Image (cartoon, rainbow, N blue to C red; front, side, top):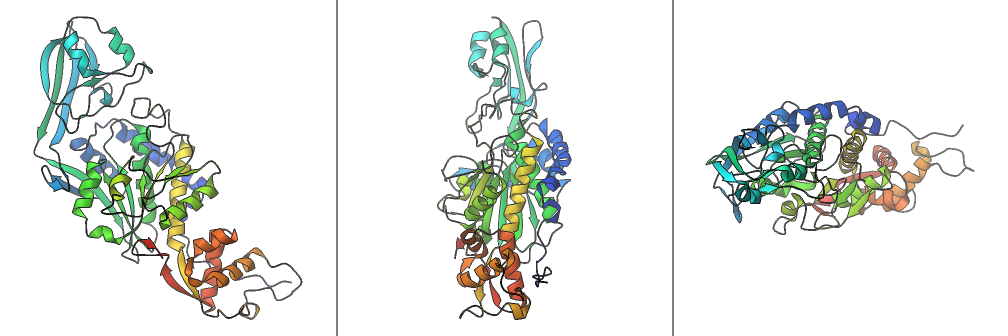
Length: 457
C-alpha cells in the first residue's frame, strides 16, 4: 500500500461557520430579518436614523459608537449640521395628502429644509422629482450641502396633480449636533488590520445598502467566534463624509491597515464584481481576483477609478490604502439604482449568500497567505523518510506531493503561497496544507505575511 500524506498538518481553517456556500445560505434568514427591520428607517448622513440603524446592528455585534460634532474640520470638509425630520407631506385643497413620507421614506428629498406654506402648483413643481421613463418608481434625491427642499414621487402621481394650491409641510430641523458612525473590532494575534467599510446613510434601499450592512454584520459576527491572525475593523458609517471623517480621526491608525474591502450592492443578481485598489497590485487585489475566479466564471475584476463609494477616500493619494471594493452590479449600472425599485424584489438570497461566501474566502486566503523560506534549498530534500512522500515508486506523484514540491521550489522568501498556487494551478488550500506539513518537519520556515507595510513584498 502506498504511504499517504499526513492529514493532521492542516491548521485551523478560519470562519468554519462560513466554510461553504450552503453554510452562507443558512445565514440568509438572519440577513433578511435584519434588513427588514432597517428598511423603513429614515436614514441620512447624520441624525437619529443613523443612530437607530447602528443600534440595531449593535444587537448583532458590539459597536463602539462615535459622535463627531458638527463643524469639526475634516480635511477640506467639515462635519455638517445634524438633520432630523418628523413628518413631511403635501396636501391638496381638499386636505388629501398627495405625497406623504409616512408611505415611503424616499418621498422626502434627504436634508430638506423645513417648510410650512401654501403654494400654487406652478411654484411647487420645481421642487418635485420623478422618473418619466419609470413612471411607477420613486427617485432618491438628496440636498446635503446646499439648503433646499423637495419631494420625490412617481411620475404617474406627478402627472395626476391638478392646478390649484397645495399645503407643503416639512417638519425638519438642522442643529449643531454630530455625525455618527460605528466600529466593531475583532482582535487578532497581530495588530495589523483588515478594514471592512460599509455605508449606512441610504433610506429604504435594499441593495444600496442594506445588503452591505447585513453582510458586514454577519461576517463580523462569525469572525468574533474565530481566532484570526489579523485584527479586523468593521466600520459602519455614512457615505463619503463618513469615510472622510473616519480617516481624519484615524490618520495615524490607518498605518496598520494591510488589506481592506468596501462592501455594498451585494444582493442583486448581477455577477460578483471586484474593483481594484488604486495601487492595482495590492495583495487584496490578487486575493480577490483569485477567489472570485474560483467561485464564478462570470465574476469580474475592474480597474480602479476615483468614482464610486468610499474607496475613493480610502484610496486617495494622501492615504493610498490597499482597499478594493466588492459589489455585484456597480452603482449606476442597474436601472433600479437610487429608486424605490431597489426593494426586496430586486435582491436574491442566493446572490447575497454568494457575496458572503466570497468575503469569507477572501478572509481565509488573507489569513493563510504568507511567504516561506526553504531550509534545505540545495536539491530536493528526501520527503519519503519524513513521511511526506510515497514509499513505493513507479506511480505519478499525487496532487499533495506536487504541492510539496512546488512549495519547496518556490519558497525562496519572495513568493507567497498564493503566488505558488497561481503559478502551479493547484488549489490554494492544498498549497497551504503542504506548507504546514513542511513546517512540521522543519523543511520550511514562515517569514510572515505576504506584505510589508501594506505593500506587496
